[in-house]
Image (tube, rainbow, N blue to C red; front, side, top):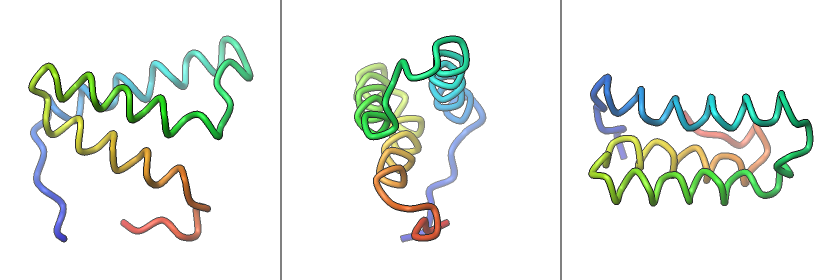
Length: 76
């Protein structure tokens, strides 16, 4: 399936979530176990979906799925 074109505001919403998690991990190493990261991204996707940010939700869901696999198995 071809990726859907997302608007800049949807990219920004998804990026804010990821940067927030990165900041948390940087300021408090180990705050979130890597195995739990897909669940956190999915929770964020659900929240974005509730706010009508469907593009951001799709991106976060995709990234959550990727984190369940080794990097060499990620598809673009």
